[in-house]
Image 1 (cartoon, rainbow, N blue to C red):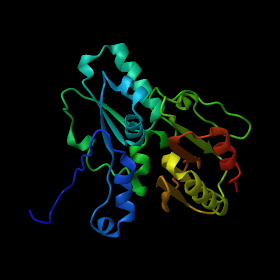
Image 2 (tube, rainbow, N blue to C red):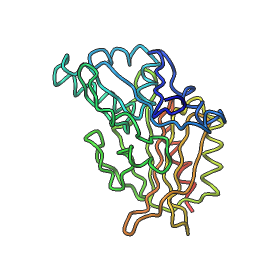
Image 3 (cartoon, helix red, strand yellow):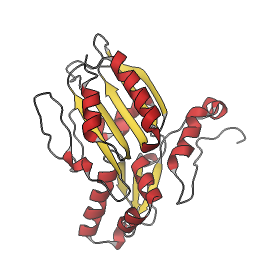
Image 4 (cartoon, rainbow, N blue to C red):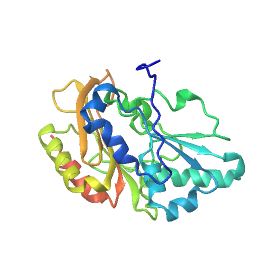
Length: 258
């Protein structure tokens, strides 16, 4: 019916960079008033993806950017090849929902109405952000050093594209007066290299969780639901981008402690 859409699916070409499309929903006032960006879905070919990731920067960027990755043609590869391609995907994007499919058959509720860009629902879509860190087998064990900083070595492999993810967490409360200027400065200086960032933070004397997400230089944040009784107040930050320096990000994040 005229003017009554349930949803709009924007399908780009196979060579499009996803970020500029996504940014439209944050910066264009008219678009923002009438619509909201729900999720980025990428379809990948199980057989040809490894070769595409080696040779094609856009392919890596689309995988890195996605909230949901639909791995198609899974019937055309061996079990080992499937495990190997899924591992490759996880090195570029540890947090997306990975859905195997054949002949493009997928349930609509796995790709519509996900709210991946909705600050209230950031934790729902991202297995990485579950409080007990229960995500799939791609998550290795954590090394705890003295400062409660722990991170995941599995997420640090960098493909030919230079795109990888860095996840940081700390159990110390974070000072908003330090964190927010740092994130602003970082996204201004390194924006083109940062495809996406997401974070959940515990501020001192703040009962609610502060949630941040960003695409390149556009970053937004807001307080969200209360920290639950007995929930560990762990602050987490995940970057997906190009040429990210883990040590530098880690020490800058550590410096934001209250």
